[in-house]
Length: 431
Image 1 (cartoon, rainbow, N blue to C red):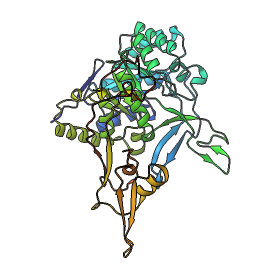
Image 2 (cartoon, rainbow, N blue to C red):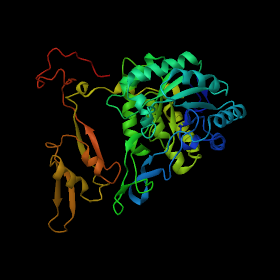
Image 3 (tube, rainbow, N blue to C red):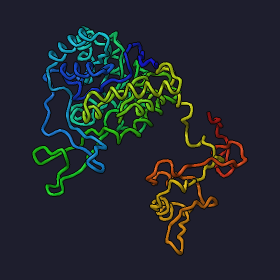
Image 4 (cartoon, one colour):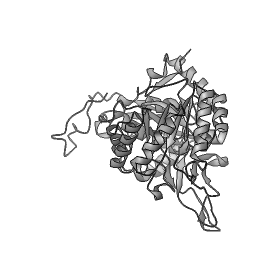
């Protein structure tokens, strides 16, 4: 049976599934329900200075798919609107009642060292396992010089992180904003400031949709709206990329990562871990489906690990990182060709239309003159292996991309004679 317990920057957890700092972790009632459901840890909703933040109504909106499936979730809620004293009291009691569960306290304060120095002993007194610095909130708080306003300036990230490491003995996790050109810069700054780990991604600036009658975006607050923080399954590809960028950056390699962004099942979690995340944080999926989703997450991950022969989570954390590289180091001589399984094909023609209209005209539509039956076949000489037909096909496994034996050795773009700037470029062999 696979062992789901982990140790993340010195913090032991019974499993790698934590709830992210958000409405689900706003108070003791929620956190206790989460622990009863089986979550390994929580990041308590961000605390700040008193008086507490004041929220508006309404606060959420969504980007929908078919049948009202929530693809992306948007919120304009701020940090906790409960007093610092009450939050600290509840954290103390919950940690006392649940000593085997992880409680990380998320913090956001103005960039004044005295304020950070004052709050650190209070947080340590609760018995919490660590702190997370919220340098990512994209709405409301940046207007006050906090959140993403700090996370977008590496010098500020390093400065505040160093303050926290100076005034606290707890592990410090720096939560990074995705609303930046290169996420590696603040990650490097966090490490330079002494951070024990980073977590990412925080939410992405967004407007999900509009009411075209009132001509205002959602959520609507008194006839007006604003951009909010986007999360949910739609942001997963962006989060995976940013996690991978930090995991494979020589300057931050080895820095523990807590993965966040669109994690809704065990497979999502496993993907984040394979790209370097030592634990994962979940928010939107829990808000949409409740805390008991962690049961499927734990069971699914455990079964997959048993199937693959992984005894512990650590056995596969970062295992995909060596296979993630820059485009210029990909093999220019590698070739795949699409292949259609005629037994599975339902003759819908979506692959043909997509390829004919928008790609390489490499799928032939054959129509029987007598029956009118349509058949689709790949023109191997024209197929470039772009995967579009496989993606558009509604039958999983009907179209596969088959590797071809080109008889050519590995050659990347830095070595390719077609590259006018190939000279004097260092060659890095593919993993």
